[in-house]
Length: 302
Image 1 (cartoon, helix red, strand yellow):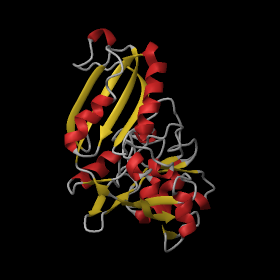
Image 2 (image 1 turned 45 degrees about the vertical axis):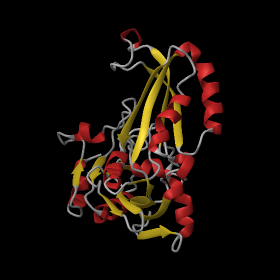
Image 3 (image 1 turned 90 degrees about the vertical axis):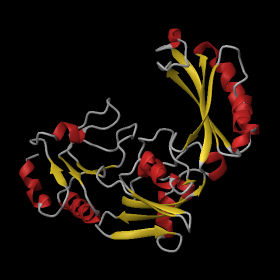
């Protein structure tokens, strides 16, 4: 598509409009999943809601598909598409915390590392992702599982309201008191109900935590998984953990012969009384003699 058709869009937005003829096009179209290699017609690095409204109207009026990118972590690569207009929120990553009401409002480009950094200053947190570079908006719109989910619910359970630009270019707020059907849809229903520009969350008192990882040889994965399932079902809600398969990381506490080898890991976090944290971690760290436990006190984000 000829990049000149986007000249009118450039006149309507404060952000940058990047097309295939621009030097930074390849960097602008890249997403976290390296297997996704799409070539959008243009990428708009929006700077404010007005840019989003202009971009939505432009895409609709020019019969362009629209892709929305928050943190860029989408596994299937939903943050980009061939011959589409991509709205990129990377430049809007602010988080404002209201400690009195225990709420926090996140812009659509914020990651969970951004969110945790802002809320931790007040000893608060909500259920986020497993890694800090995941986008707040994308994870929440898809549900949002995290270490705090057993005690505080999913990310979407903590979503109080959202600002949204709809397909007709209108700006609306979805909450329990206005457009409540839209809020219901956004809570885990995905991103096709409009372009979310900010999200307001309920946050909870979470400050210091115990966190750690236990690494097991892959051949014992079945035994580990059965133990994990039984232990987690009976564990207090303050304990959150995830089972995963990985390559042994080159870290000091793991013997070198396991570096780069397939392993089974359990990553956990204790958010209850700190005096009980090491005990809570060790109870899930007593399965086999070949484990490599590592439990530490740390702040959120870890």
